[in-house]
Image 1 (cartoon, rainbow, N blue to C red):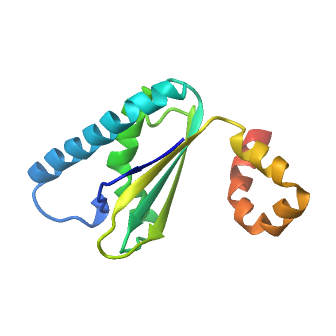
Image 2 (cartoon, one colour; image 1 turned 120 degrees about the horizontal axis):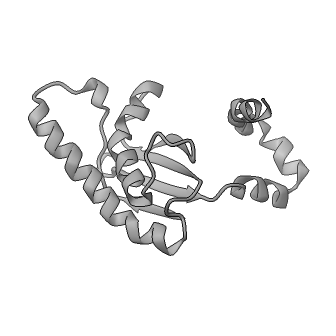
Image 3 (cartoon, rainbow, N blue to C red; image 1 turned 90 degrees about the horizontal axis):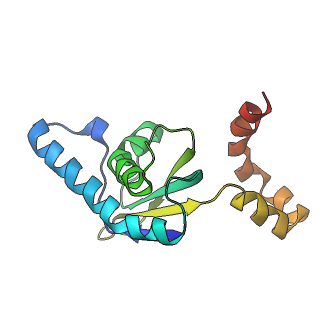
Length: 149
């Protein structure tokens, strides 16, 4: 499942100013995300189930690795509300990415996968494809090593 939400996201780590307006904005973003996704997760049978969620920020600005995670905090909370699982629960694996876009475009792609979807995709593409894209697959090594213990 993949859906695009037209929501501008900024890093909470870089923000200055009153926490009063931040709290209202945070609640609004979290609520909008949850509202947009709750029926989709229900329709795809992903509520209260183990899954992988990929959040891809679309913006003209590119953030560094700690700020990209911070920018998706409100979205992550809204997604966890929609799937009815705490965002810290080990049942959900979170991945955050970003895409540089023209100035007037900003939003977030939310993708949800059931466990094993990536492995099935790689197997279907074959060994040659896997070897060709091995550099991109290196991100899963820490997860594989953790699971091997």
